[in-house]
Image (cartoon, rainbow, N blue to C red; front, top):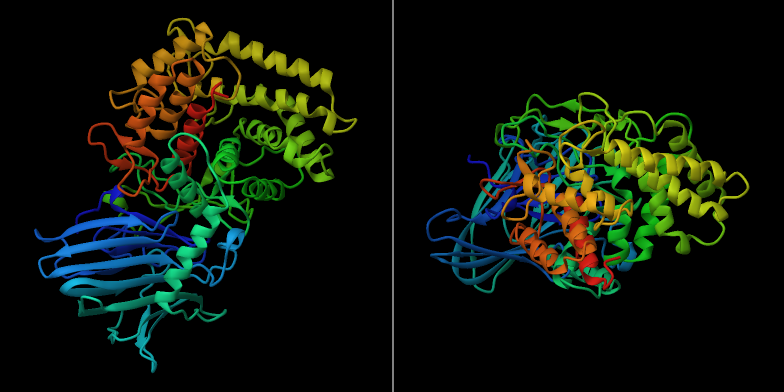
Length: 598
């Protein structure tokens, strides 16, 4: 089977887990327990790793056309198939708990995938092809028809129950395959419920009423969140995607819904992004504050405080599990062929073991952003966290680290890491009145100033005429665009302006995409949005707006962005939907909105 483009997939979420469904009607990815749990459908990564297809029998033929869209302000997907025999709509959703409204969305999601088929015209032959393969395809479950007509699939720790009132679903040994016709005005609902083999049984829901209530739940949530700025439709869509990537029970925002979608087709930079990165913390909070509401920001903050725990001498991990797990050790899945043959497929992410010196700066910067919301007097845990992070930076900022792009070779003195160390010390000095008598303002100020002087002296490469990726290195790195965004240097500073120009000239392309480094294979969308912010801060607002519109044009038909864009083909690359890309969009749109660019 040909590999479907990444942009072909729509994203479903119940704020507990995520699923991907293609324009061919096949659900090729679903991790039902939570985002980072084992998949029961993983055809995204191997043709034999499970899927659930529900589509016209003519899908893929010359006479088949597809139009799809989300129901407004939701992640409920409606796909209309036009065929020679007639037209049919399939509405897909991961069910919300019945009656959930506002911030209850996702708190008690029942882990049910619902699909409703509606005949629009003619009489359309349809096909159901259900092949569950739990644990990323390792398990082939036993399937049996129950007395009530449902099909039970069970293997290992997983139970799945597939139901459809009005259609018999014959169970072969390890799949269900059935054809039927849908006539104009006819409605048929399917639901697939997940349960643990030794836990609560799978839920039972009415598909049609569940879809309607799930739409209301999403729309009620979005109605309580106002954004008044430029590009409101794009920002609202990105905000909805970020809500969909939020694990509601803890407030953690997962970096993406998938693992091991490659940065380069056939390459090995294929990583598991189904975790929450502290390093992205400040950017995430800013986007949630702009496009969502303070309550979501504060829940994410509470998750981070609990996850970090008491701070000692060891570096703070850059990422955690969605409920604060620290050890998320990585292993490969040799039984999976990988997306378009891109191996290995990785589960877990060993970046948690790396020293990444920018992490404390992101967290302390986020605390500074939320300072008024957190109150004049910090509680003991918050105060201890800020003090611990600040002292850790004071003791370790001279050490090399792995940097923002998490290379797996050796540590270096990365520019962006040193700048975030400066951010940590600068914001700690400003927060000192709320930190009690242990706040050592004079010493912290001296360290802050020393870090700044070191960056200005060592970070600028005279031969390149620009700030480069690491001290002493001639290699440009788009992470230098972050300096004006975090306030280390004004964008119109002569050296900074020269760096922005060098990044545009040497790492950019005609479509506004920015590579992270010179031999990077694709445009990294976050870096393009950083460039938008830099141009606004440099007073070039019209150019920034043109660039923003170019970059957002790389979204798929549903407004979804992956991590990167292939420079030659324009194809989306990397895990999807990518939180950082949507965070970059929101923050760039707000930067374009603010008269001062602040």
